[in-house]
Length: 327
Ligand code: NAX
Image (cartoon, rainbow, N blue to C red; front, side):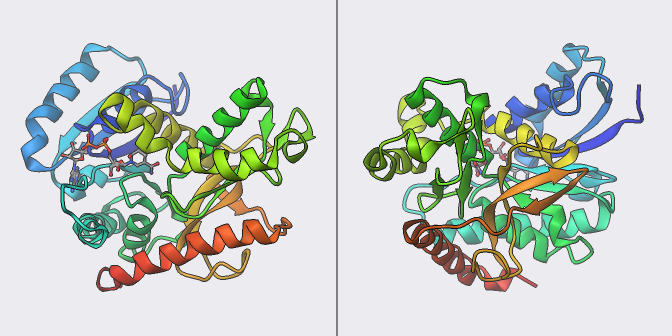
């Protein structure tokens, strides 16, 4: 057995947190030879429920689970964390405007960014899942001045996996023959699932699908898949979101399949695809050894560039609403 790694998760009494904790504890993130310490972080009123999660984790007797800490104190929770999942956030309540939600959640991610900066491992990798994920990640990063911009990312993997699933069902192929899928932009209804560079069993997907279906049905359905799940389940995606978060972190830490790329929300510096700087924007990336590289130089037609611009515009608007929370 190797030296344990420490994984901190916020919102672990919630739906996604509950689903992800058991998978990570059982070796679903780093495999059966890697022990993990789990640091579970909740707000005070949810500590009782969190205690129940801790009891259940112990009752699983997972050989890979080394130690569990449950806390509402951010510095205790993020202490020496190698990997952080920021999942806990405030849900949108009735009558709440997008700006109210941005500010309410911004005030969660600002102190969390600062506490990660103070207390986590210097090489920590932080994945933001709580919505609005891209802008929350921007806030966390701005408040963690000692972290490199490449140490924080936001989750687009659920959208990416949904895009692969829908294409695979349309073409009646297994998901693993689909490579180089990209979902660009924001985790919102402006996201752009792009089939232009995607291949299916080595063939260009653009040659296999009807362009009208792609533009009028496929893109819309991916953008609105979350709402479709809520309508069917009466609750938002939880197990699939937890699974996507594990996929994201595993690829980031251990690398992507060299013959393909994945979608990740990452900090922009203004040099990729004309997207302005200082946004957390989803691009196609290759990952290796805890780092990622944006796939550069893909040719994009006017339609695709228009979709990317629309999502960028939305993210700029979100950033403008939280300027006070950015240092
Ligand atoms: P739940 O409402 O079930 O759970 C949220 C948990 O977070 C609660 O237990 C709550 O007590 C806790 N919490 C709230 N504030 C906290 C704080 N300051 N520190 C620590 N914990 C805190 O929501 P759930 O279904 O688990 O969803 C969590 C977040 O993921 C939401 O913001 C949701 O919108 C977002 N999602 C993001 C997705 C993505 O692809 N980026 C997809 C799935 C999901 O919708």
